[in-house]
Length: 100
Image (cartoon, rainbow, N blue to C red):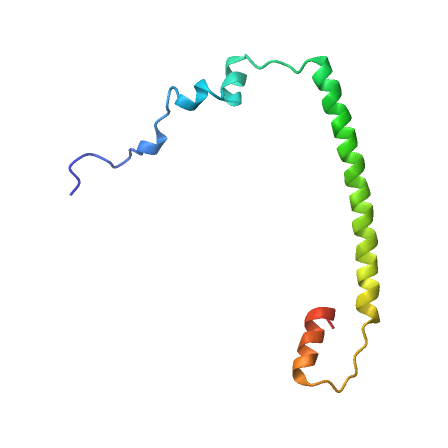
């Protein structure tokens, strides 16, 4: 039997009032709760929007390239023709690679 009462109490549920790391890196959630969150300055906001626009254009270019490559891959898979009288191990490889 336990020497101390533990039923219904979870020591991990205890809320720590302060954490030593908060002195170095403040918790943003705690700052929002306290109402101390500062909006970004206009200069930083403009830089962030420019970076976002740049990243979105790069992402759309990458999506277009992926679509093109998928089409090429589909063409290559359909172009693979192997004779039908293959050994069993080659037919398994074909099924794995081509999916037919």
